Image (cartoon, rainbow, N blue to C red; front, side, top):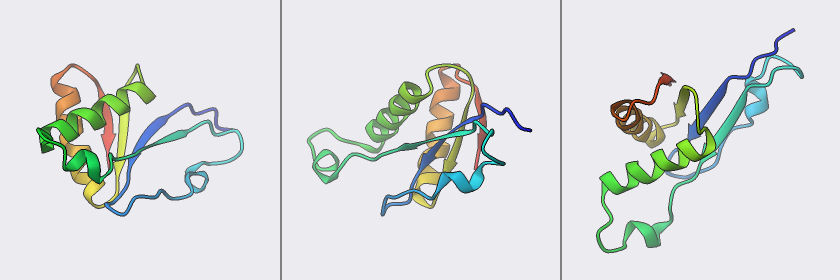
Length: 102
């Protein structure tokens, strides 16, 4: 029996949505958790002063709010993979451990 407590964050593609994370668990006793990170809407993207750097910083803050301590494993789909890479670099530069990026 698995008693895993692994925690992952998921960044979707541009279209949003997330897969059925239950398919990634080994069984009912597998405590692996997946936290989907949502993107801001078009109003935020078009706001004065918004930038790619601001987006990455905001997404990183959301990740840290969902997983406040310990290593973070990031799973990104399509554009989410690119965002995940940038976020991993940012968090590592701040001393946060990145357990993996997929």
